[in-house]
View 1 (cartoon, one colour):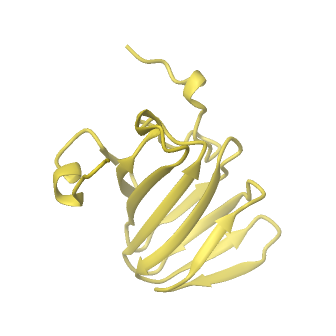
View 2 (cartoon, rainbow, N blue to C red):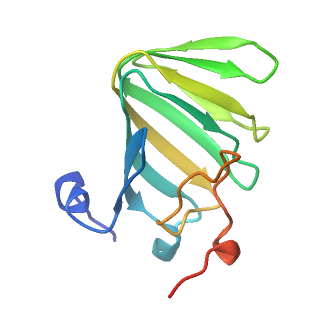
Length: 131
């Protein structure tokens, strides 16, 4: 049984911050669940380019509003209660109109230290150099 609280995880190495977002990673590869589970905050007024070439992601919006802009120009409105799944490694830009609180699930599971590279990609675990 794994039991964790968001509050404790926010005050640990499970909280990762970047320019446009912060992510509290409640389940990671080391938990051996086959996926990772995150509570992510996207800061209001930001635009974040993402392209998960190595991962599939499902996202559920708890709070806030955004527009997802696909590379083909198609746009999707995101609001509380919306789920979107990047089932084809979909390259996109997330435009946060207000602060977003999202539940994010990744397959394969993240090890926990990942941030987006210059192409919006999270590296695979094998590509991450650990000291």
